[in-house]
Image (cartoon, rainbow, N blue to C red; front, side):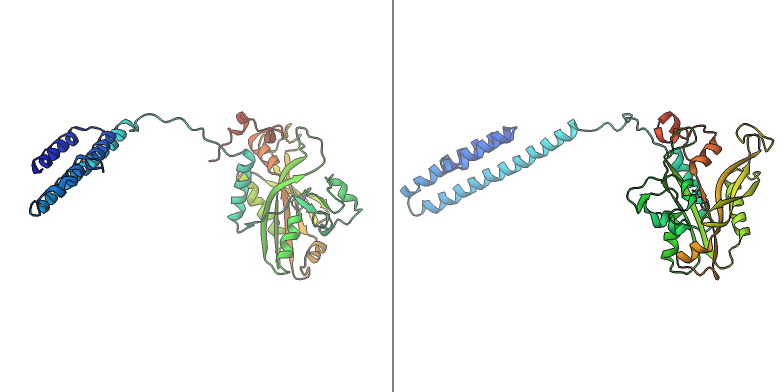
Length: 344
Ligand code: PHE
């Protein structure tokens, strides 16, 4: 019996030694150590042995079993390790291969110009405010000193949604919304960029949707000269230090006095050309001192506080700055156009 066990051990270890795959190894395990295997068979015959022999044979049988189990485990670990190494070798990536090119996007020229203007005013201590494009008639007109039936409402043909709501025709309603939030206490110093809508027929200089940037400063002792100084800094930073500005009297219901600002034409240097229509000046924005009615309606004491406001169109500014001739270029998203304006 002991011989038989020694034989079995030798046979099993030899087979384990020579296996090269996991399945065969499992078969060996089942055939030697399983319930119907030869070792169990030997142990079954132990009943015929004498009382002295029995524990000896039992001990040897256990040792054989342990030796086979251990050999199987070691082989299993070795085979698994080899498997992993094989996969690692076959799946390695060649990191020296050139990558697929990724197309780099660019800022839309309007985004670039709006961010440039924002940066400029942030540098002068302004913060940015944003508001809704679907606006109440109250904020878009009424609280800006344009009561219902006011003839100046016709200056801005509007898309009404209901009697009391419309797509904002200007960013000026943000003046009122911002002042309301300040609860009658200055200082207020914001710019508000955003989309606006007017019922215009689209052509080279008109679009039913375009953008504006509104500016508002309210505090004690704000004067017209503050407005002029601010706009001069803006114009010269935007268009070059050699630009001159001029303010012409104008009319907006929410500012008094109201002005329009022109800059000297860069193309002809003020001599007169077709871009400035022979005048030497190009209009770039509307502005004025906040009307006392507007201050009062938004909860500010107009005896204590004064302010200035301005509104400009980034499209117009980009068109002048880059010599773009048709406003529709901003909206048709032709990449040949857009990609020319990578932001520095
Ligand atoms: N909201 C005016 C417009 O759209 C521009 C403006 C803003 C004028 C602020 C004065 C002050 O024409």
